[in-house]
Image 1 (tube, rainbow, N blue to C red):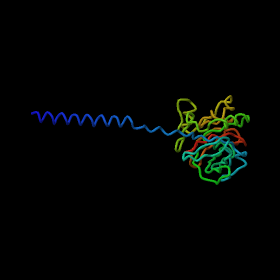
Image 2: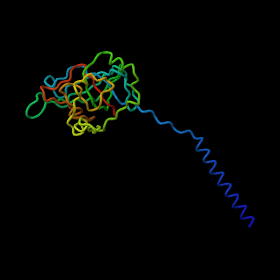
Image 3: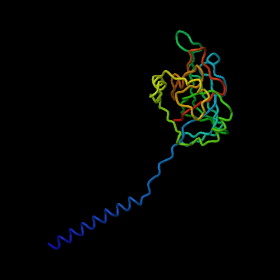
Image 4: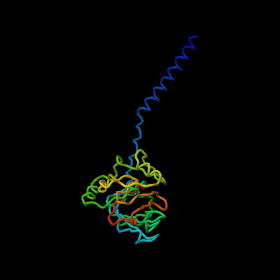
Length: 233
């Protein structure tokens, strides 16, 4: 009987020691810190006037970065890097068959003093060119801050539908900011918004036709210096 009690005691002691050792090891193992989020926004300005009556499908469109950016794979794009794209869709005039429209898709980038490389981005917002100090403030900030990160959908629009504009955008109808928001700060531009008078974003995607702009009044166009918000994927 004593032998059985001793064996039971030693088994219990060994089990206790094993459990205690496992707990100490788990507590002493350093926890892996979460990887920092990368800001996937790209801020740029259009280089030349892109007018539905002055371009044709396939024409090259360029823009330049007004602040450094970082791609999901860690590639850093310095300020001044050039975005290359093309006109993908076109309707010169607004008529009974529908509004004037123009589609843009950016597919590659040329870093300063670098080689052209493919890029997977979606153009999600446009705003008028503003004072130079807005660009300077943007460049002086930290473009890699994760706090202001915005995510793009993999294909069609994925927007907050708690507002009338959000509901319209989720149905592919586009939305235009009120006139008083036309001079929105660059860092405050929101996906799906056109801050240009009479120009609406009908849809956007990282695949062709890219981002389609429409206007019911006259011919749709984007002037030189128009600010662009793109999201890298």
